[in-house]
Image (cartoon, rainbow, N blue to C red; front, side, top):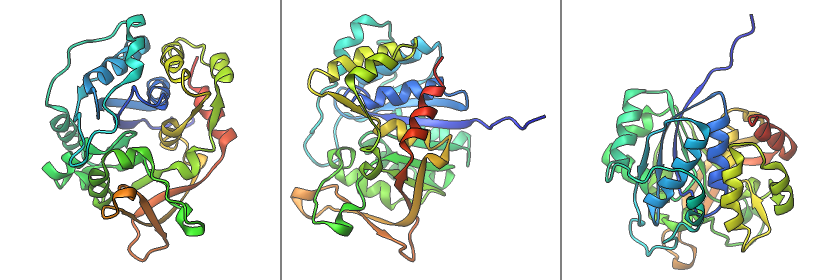
Length: 299
């Protein structure tokens, strides 16, 4: 008898409701048969509305997943993401409206401690909740199975003078620096170096997002398409690597985060092959393999 693929215990921290890729990612996790989604925490402006969006997808999927609104504001810098625009589509989908308040960090802490060495923390938004978690309980990183983040841009500075700063890292740069200093057993980043290679134009999205769980995502996406003509699958790519590691190629090195230059706050810099390098950074992606894998879970 063939060995059954193992399930993965996942905690998702998300700013669903801004860039559409968070909803695209959550739909994938809810449809992925190998994903045991232990809970969802939301982060940055209007976290309760973001929790409602997550609830809408969970209800369509028929799954009861604990959802906790987290930090609304970054640690030290002004808010750059005060609203959740896709909440305008909530009127079309049943969703919960009441959530536990002020408990997101404690929920993460308790869940990880209840499953030592088993939980992968998947972060696809600004890192405020995670920085607070690691500050409150410094042992938590060592109790994770791994930390996988959609965050950063790493290789541009190696060959150019580009100064791009990835959005999740920029929104709360001090939290970003705190999380990159942590040392979980696996510390993996999927950044713009590879995510910008997996895109889909709006007409193709409308044609393919037809299964029941992708219909609300398409509804949320119509808000996104009012200002943009495509989806970049930043967050779903990070999630997919948990279940098919061959989608991306990773290399080890050391990541540092800029906190001195005001214009570059949150910029991630990667030193490949550093002697004490404990960060894994995605450098390659098989886009065809990713899209085949992503859509294979929807029926």
